[in-house]
Length: 117
Image (cartoon, rainbow, N blue to C red; front, side, top):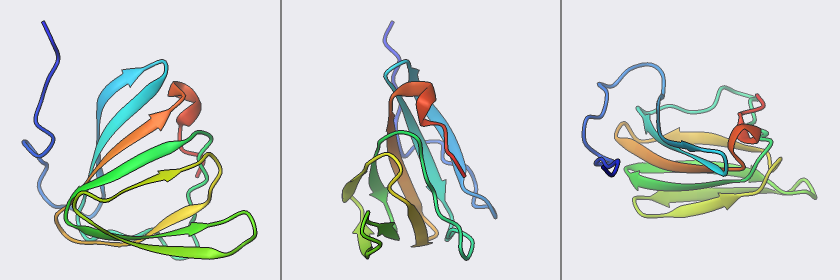
């Protein structure tokens, strides 16, 4: 029997923390649904992940900041349907999300893609 689901069904109630659900865990990739409730990265905090990540905002709005190798910062305003590829060790942070933001994140490389925070 095939595994299946609905990305926007069964969302958790809003809370003070983002909510992560693993939809697929495979040696080559991990796929997560992330529900954000008006969260942002703490001041001065940057994600620095060991593997590549492809992320799409499925619902809501968000703003990310990416740091490029030369130190330049890029601000990205995302709306539902927008996606971005974040290469391994590209530092990035979430500046803001709407209270109804839902992400689909694909971490490439399986276990090597655990967050280095």
